Image 1 (tube, helix red, strand yellow):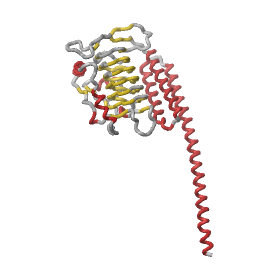
Image 2 (spheres, one colour):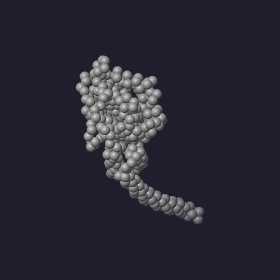
Image 3 (tube, one colour):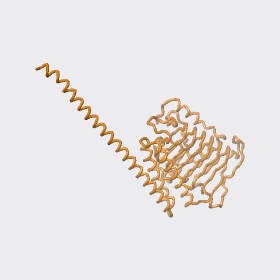
Image 4 (cartoon, one colour):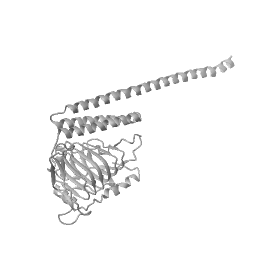
Length: 359
């Protein structure tokens, strides 16, 4: 009897184990089904909430009529929050949906910028163009432009400070000369642009081997097709598209966004003279802003670090740009040769030689 019982015991145990395995398998299938349903529900809910907020921003944009800058700045913050929400969920969204969301955000950003230009027209300025030698000379003629000629056509698409089609020039705007106007930089090569004032939005298109310094950008910086350039900026938001070999020294309230970019180096904004905190306060940028290193690469959705950008380790950064007055800042940049040498690009190239990207 003991032998008979012992022969049944393993079989009974095996049946019990098989039953448990089947039950576990059923539970797993149920969990997988629930997870799949849960994901589908999440995607639907996210789509509904995204589209609802997108339409709400668009409707509000159409109704802006008074207190233009205040209302548009508020809508910009909502757009930034919507973009941040998308970015946080991008890794779980289907690839096709990711592209659709990006297209929607890009279109809405362009609509907001166009609405601002439509409702807040300002006298357009175009800087006088000169043809200086490729290297700055001694004395007063260093290839830089301080004056601006007015264009009275109010129907132009852009209203603000426009700098277009210059080569090997130094352009300086002193504190108080811009007074919150938007700035447009395009088709520049070998130029040094020094704007020691608060501006509205910054639009940058097709810059090559340029150095750009802007004390405070009250709105966003939208930058396209920059090649071998060095920027020092304080902004609320920065977006960089289709660019290569760019060094950014940033003070930013939100994480920078890059798309179709390579070799982009990020470091903290190191520009300082005694009036800088006041300019940051006027632009609602805050004295401290640590989001400069929270980079989002829209072309890299993997969990591994993107190969397209690096945070410059503290030991490899350039010497801080600290002076006792705005006049000292101006003298420093006036004394530098043209086109800019841009030593930062060579200095930061080593960031791609290792995985060291310590903030």
